[in-house]
Length: 216
Image 1 (cartoon, helix red, strand yellow):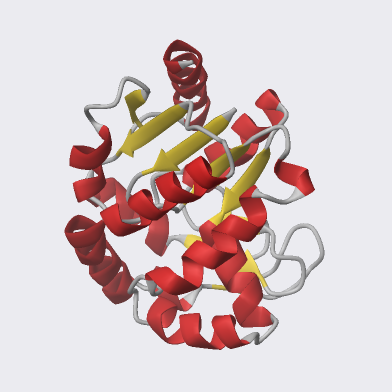
Image 2 (cartoon, one colour):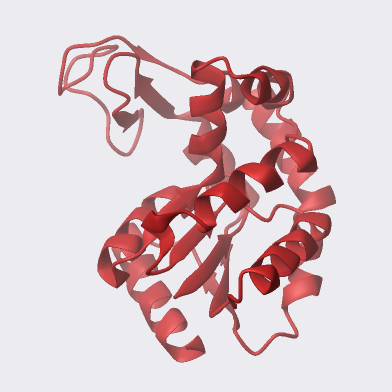
């Protein structure tokens, strides 16, 4: 099964992607995680990507397309995959179609997670991560027991540069310019579905499972 999950920053793609991958026995390929690992490892692509990520802008297409092709053709993806954060624009969508065709693969479902902008800003600006173990918290929805400290390992909690409110506004602006046109690109396809993500996490998951099964 080959699934694309897309929507604005803060829509819950990462959380839902993990749950869906486990449920369907496939891998979750999160573009943001791939890029952040490249930044942490200080690879040439990672250094190139960092400036764009810190400014709330998308990483150049040529950087991400190659990374995605490596992942979807790896042995770990033999049973299928969920793409989260890719494609982010029509150029990337066309590149994805080309690489899938080249490897005799097809998309089974594309799901758009629809969320209001006010809720997105609240979700993103409250996110906190542990510097030591990477576990995530939220100031409002899932705060740590001790302010500034991770419940799991006691590590220091921090806010990513691209989760500052001023950067979030820029990220949403870029999203509207570049990613929103994917709705027009995919909406005529029989495997396209829209799921509201303004509701609770568990309800969104249930609706996603139904949407994916219906598309398949």
